[in-house]
Length: 201
Image 1 (tube, rainbow, N blue to C red):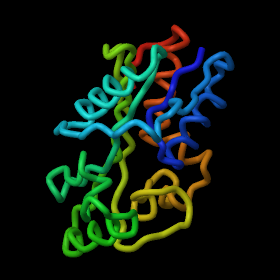
Image 2: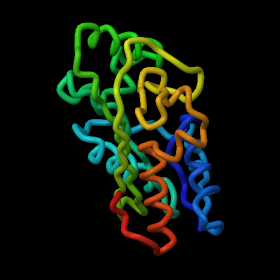
Image 3: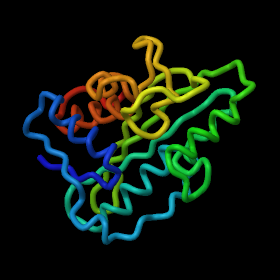
Image 4: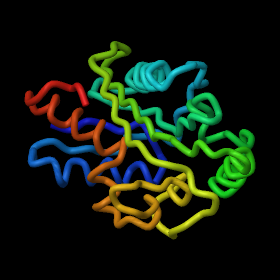
């Protein structure tokens, strides 16, 4: 079985492919949606990760007869009332990059003692414009006062994971994927596709 990923983000695609390699279900494959770069991106108007993942999956599923999935993910910071949440990728502006987003986050938390945060990922599966299932994964951590590590992407350099005693940018790809929000949601999706365990994470 092949399911098509509706994302051109290289970091996400690496994790998508790793999910199937490590899943124990060799008959399930993830491939990028054919022609994705030629399809206009939908406007992400949802106010939750679930809403955005679902609208993207439904939208892209209309361009193929195959099963597709889309994800929406981001960072929730307790001291910021759960922000940046669905605005994580554009926290510092619509043209912002990872560096700008991380710098803005550290600036906003400069005087904060409460550094608790979590990564959230919701994956939605759809076909022919119809939602089939959703999967949610989270990982709890803390925001440091400076960036550490060269790996990962997004907010990984400032996201400290206590059980590892390092940031997700300092963790190996295998370590990160074993505990990450996206890894949890992807593994649940693969189990569901294989007719296995409940999609609840």
